[in-house]
Image (cartoon, rainbow, N blue to C red; front, side, top):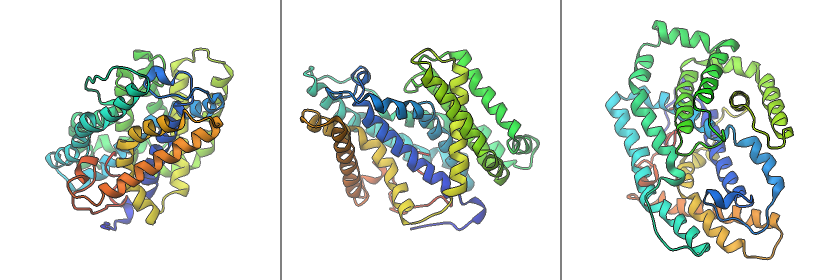
Length: 367
């Protein structure tokens, strides 16, 4: 395992949060199979719904995807440290664009074929990024924002970078970030807020989160100290807005409240992660490498598991556990093959050399 020992840039917590965010995405997708509306968005669903799952799902769905965009922007800060603009674009093309194109034409059709077969539909395929839409967004952000990000990185003592660092090291500075996200929902007016995939809302929100994630890391330790200090305030705000949202019993919640709740949860996660997760270990090294292939593969194994489990006459709770376990087993079993086969590694976002760079140089792959 290759590491670069630069104490000032060790951010193991960011790697942990990336792993956790992808794990939550996988669990959330499993849970969709137990919601009555799951088939409408292309999931295989159980004949028996598990309505109680909606409460934790509702808590997650306003911040789990934005969190990944923030973490991706943070990862680019570290990736830029030893790369020129051309090197960064080339590296991100290999690590993001190649898996995106490969996944769109090889992996995504697998679960679409399974879905259509399960519901007795004619087999046809129109190209679609499917669940890999996120990768296309990230690559666009890297290309579009690179001039500005490199300017900030190379002029960290300049007026603009210094202003960003000073502003984001104060609690009131976070209100500027909140204002940007509120402006996005007011201008685009997404309904529902949680519809991120292949929408202008998802693209613009992701762009903002990506940029602010970069700026948070640019701001240095002062930013992390500030959010740790205010972590309980963020948690109270996020939870209070969640309770208010649930109490409305399906009423349309104003976008500005959803944007506020989303950022409150994200700041909560970053603050507690910074306090408790900034540590390395063998588990983190393994999961960091596995996260990207698992993300790419999980829908195919989720659909296979759904086909096998949902016809069984067993309690819905046991169905959930079995689908989750089969999906995890399939993803990690396939990952163990991929990591050992040189030509497969780049297709799933892994370095061809087989070297693993831990978060001493920042989050990798999907970031």
